Amino acid sequence: MTSTTTMSAALEPMQRERLLRLAHDVSFEAGTRLFEEGRRADRFWIVRTGTVALDLHIPGRRTAVIETLGYGELVGWSWHFPPYLWHLGAEAVSPVRAWEFDAEAVRATCAQDPEFGRAIAVWVGRVVAQRLHASRVRLLDLYAPYGSGSLT
Image 1 (cartoon, rainbow, N blue to C red):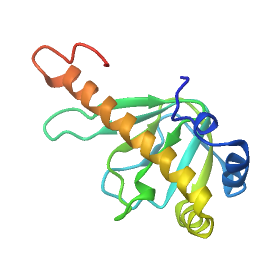
Image 2 (cartoon, rainbow, N blue to C red; image 1 turned 45 degrees about the horizontal axis):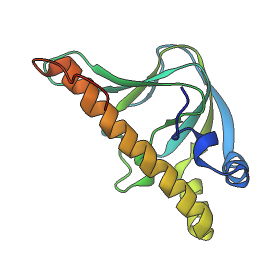
Image 3 (cartoon, rainbow, N blue to C red; image 1 turned 90 degrees about the vertical axis):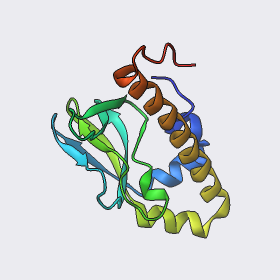
Image 4 (tube, one colour; image 1 turned 60 degrees about the vertical axis):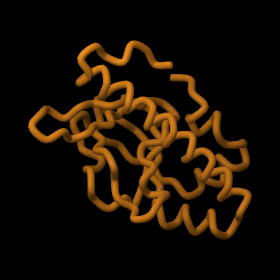
């Protein structure tokens, strides 16, 4: 997926390098839950390989997959906004390798360097806007009488 919300598209090389200094490598087997709605958002990930599904629990229905994320995509944005609780769930669809970040360390780095902090905030804001749009379209496709009709 080529998108303005991938890390490489959203951040300048020096900003990416600075962020990646705060990362460590992790792996998840297919079917592993990365997080659940309503739980504490204390970390986030950037996918290196594999796919992660974002899902929403809908009472009385099956969990709805809202979006599937791949290479370079940010998994989780709730770590950036108080009260730091997940708004969706996430599960590895395939084996996943990712960079994992401690949210508190990234927020502290953002506070120390306003230019870096602004770049991260703009990136996360773009991700939120894109995900809200994708959620709306997906839920309309699943539950509206005639579907959404389009992504635009």
